[in-house]
Length: 483
Image (cartoon, rainbow, N blue to C red):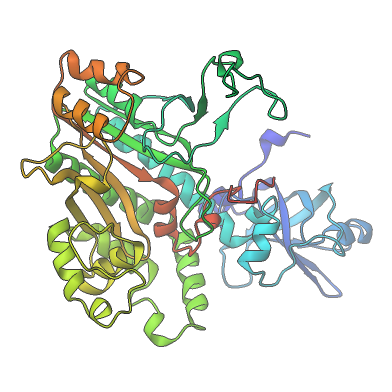
């Protein structure tokens, strides 16, 4: 069959080898016929553009052409000729068509019409065959590749941190338990509690919420590392911004302070955006037009001020605003939505935990730029963040993006053993179980910092998709582990 001899549609469109005989393979998007000829639009996923195949009924049997319905998979051999129509420079005149896989047009759920995103989530196993999701997942690939390229070029080392762990880095307790015990009849200790000594790991274990703590261990030996892997939160949240399984990029750097950390994060985000602009032009143009079409039904005041590509360029080309949490609270307290009680969570005093509505107000209404917020109250941040001299705040950093809210969270880490231990004791975090983490402060400690970027939120921002479930192939959310 010589599958390896096939030419990708992307290559055909870029090279247009007029007069050559080629074989292409892909899935039928549409077929239209008149008395003399059939036109088949074929797509193989290599590019958003379909390739036009012209089939002469005198050469290709009616029986075969009938099977070339939307969704069918074909192998087509023929000659590349100059296209008579507009839209592409060449087309393929078919000499032979082989149906590799039929698709019954009465049953195939993806027809050449507009389907809602909600419907497409129900058939996530097929939705990548649509233009929208083909574009999203090509952009996602490009961004993932750019992550590795960026850190490799900067001399960082890629570390694979555990997916199964006995610690909860965030301390929120929203973890998925990992066990081999019979959950219907687990072994018990004398006091009636579950006897985890009889479990696989001989202790309680869970899926990781972050690779950060292990990343710190690596950074305090290799200087600059990053992790990029799946993380899990058992948070019963059904918002457009949350998933139970998602991917995190977490660099950790020895010899970095809070300012170095913010500089790296800003540079990294701009690099990713620029990479997508340079390498995903056709897909981004399609996604921009999709967004414009979607926004036509919205009231004028809810429509984006910029097109998708213009917004990406704006973020990549401008310095992010840097303000402290204290300055942000003053801005929010004086803001119209707060004074007119339009915020769902009113800002009344210093110490409030900022919600998405506050973050988006700062970015979209007040500054109209991405914002790096620093120096949060220590009471609302994690135990490992470095305490500032004022005794009230920590050297934390969140980066806020338009339409998304928080996209990056990070901090300078607390490298001073005595302050870290006292903070852990304050929060009831058992220091004996974290002996390995504390050893890095006992032996050769140094200032260090790091951050986490939620990869799906980054893909959401770059593609303009409104729901995070539409930028991961098979979303895991409360009540949904299909496919």
